[in-house]
Image 1 (cartoon, rainbow, N blue to C red):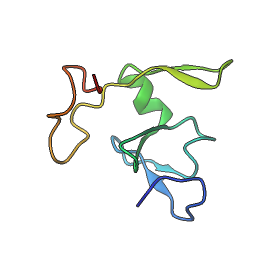
Image 2 (cartoon, helix red, strand yellow):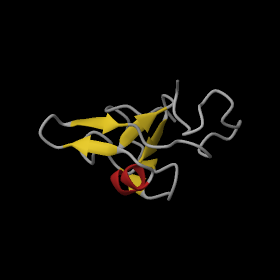
Image 3 (cartoon, rainbow, N blue to C red):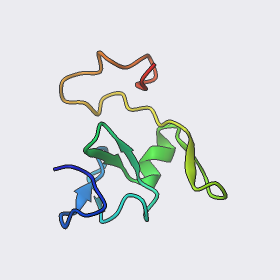
Image 4 (cartoon, rainbow, N blue to C red):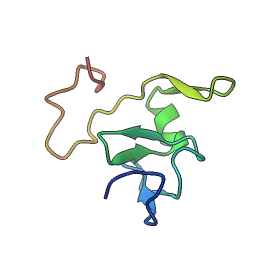
Length: 80
């Protein structure tokens, strides 16, 4: 399932499984085209969200969230 604003299907957090109806409205962190972290999991993984600028200013650690392994990601689990 691809994460997009027009999808009728509900996404689930890749970490905790919490349903996310709209990642943009719920401040979810989109990654890998079709994956999302809920706000709480993204922050717990080191992400930082700037409320005033309405954007993520620090990328959450994504290590362990890819079924094919984390070979393409650095030691923090984020793209180089």
